[in-house]
Image 1: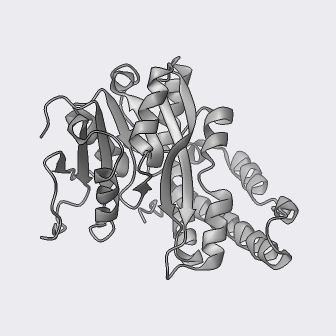
Image 2 (image 1 turned 45 degrees about the vertical axis):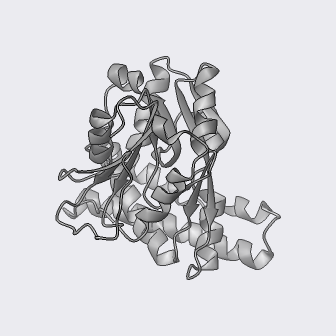
Amino acid sequence: MIETPDVSVIIPTFREWDILPKCLQALQNQAFPQEKLEVLIINNDPTSVVPNSLKLPNNMTLFDQPKPGSYASRNLGIDRAKGKILAFTDSDCIPDSNWLANGVKYFEKGADLVGGRVTFFKEADGEELAFLYERQFSFNQKRNIEVNNQSITANLFVKKEVFDKVGSFPEGLLSGGDFEWTKKASKSGFKLVYGEDVIISHPARKSTASLKKKKKRTSGGMYIKFFRDFSFLKKVSYALFLLRPPVTIFFIRKYSIIQRVRLFFLRWQLEWIGVQELFKLSFTGKSAERV
């Protein structure tokens, strides 16, 4: 392990040994000095067998986090990290070769946090509709940051001292903890900026079925975060708000009319699935899913 890295990259992983190597290879190919970089891989299932094929360079270390949840994994990485700047991504992401070099530059301009751009690619066996949906509706980092003062951890840089003052990620949430934490940091006076040239490539989910699973998981996070505390009338009112037909999809001219119709019904169906999950969690004793 290098002694005084400038940047620590923290990557939580959960039974993803087959896709993790692509992320690690991209980090080895960075236009950023490897001697100024450490990579902390946090295995969130210590019972899973690490494949013998996983060979780590000297500046990469694997840690086990038995406590469930990606935020618990990231918090362990924060505790172990030695860098002045912490960079977060996910094990299925592929950083651009200039990801680190470009991300670090924003700190020289006064940033305390940097959220970068996320692009999507379709894997060979992926469904076209799932890819179109992800590309259109998932991870709009520019809007997240410039409008809502929040960012996802799939592409986030933070000065380590910010965690010293704001605290760690909320471990009780299944999803949305990154939004909650970055918004808290912004409200605390730390400067969050958008990095258009700080690019991560993210695989689109392969199927509409996987989008439905994701919707259940994120609805579970929504339930834990605020929905469970709503009164019955407020639950109903919020559900009706979510279930508005997404007619604005028909104004997205870059898609054919058939693609727009398919996107319309998929997005509407996903909202129905999400609302059903919220009410099941509220009234049937169902537990939130980790998918």
